[in-house]
Image (cartoon, rainbow, N blue to C red; front, side, top):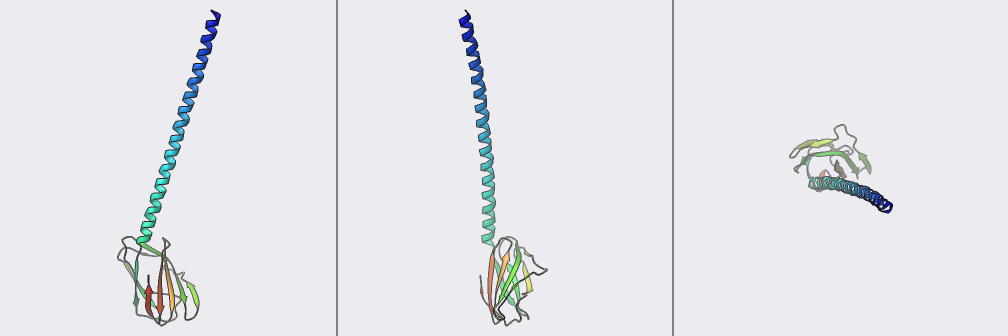
Length: 157
């Protein structure tokens, strides 16, 4: 009889240890699944954000026309469906061989869809007859290039 009782005690301890290991395995598996799901959700949100940012960046479009004046003045029109913020204007004046990064008080210029900034004076160009390359940079890091020769806009992207 003593032998049967000892065997039953061991069987009880084995059941308790097995139950504890089973519970620990379930808790570990549940934790791993929760962590993977949270990381995947974060990845999907990041990918969606970057996709939206790239879509907005690729849809940015500005149209430039020459406005009479000395120094050179441009009309800048937002032709896309989202707002554009112009953060910097860089001018390479080929006539005087100088580079001017415009720290203008009116920068940033925010243009809503269809909006035009009229008669924007380009700092760094001596006269309307200058030869220059103008780069307009937006907050989404798009760069729009304008080439001016003799006061005429000959290239714009």
